[in-house]
Length: 77
Image 1: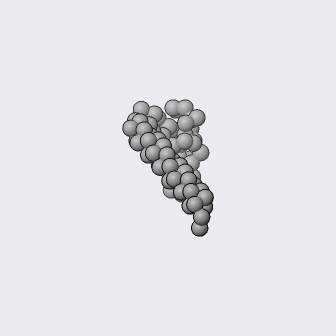
Image 2: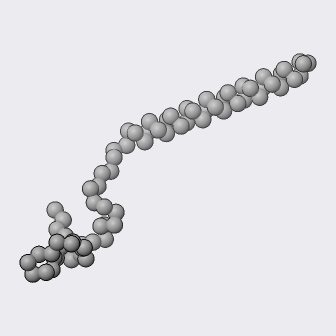
Image 3: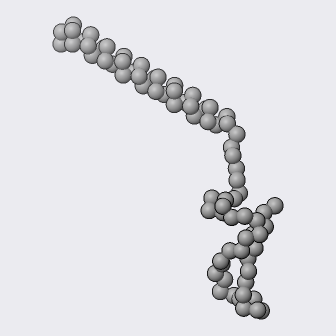
């Protein structure tokens, strides 16, 4: 191996090592910033967001009530 090959190998090695370190630094900074943000929690199912309080829903229940019909009414608190 001559000196130019060793020099090019060293340049590319340090370029890859520097890029790897920069990528790791940016990834960890992003991850830490995301973990510091408050978590938005919602117990509401995504498909129920458009349903208003008091709206009747169609529900399958194999055990029927005394009148033969089961009405389910949504009440949000």
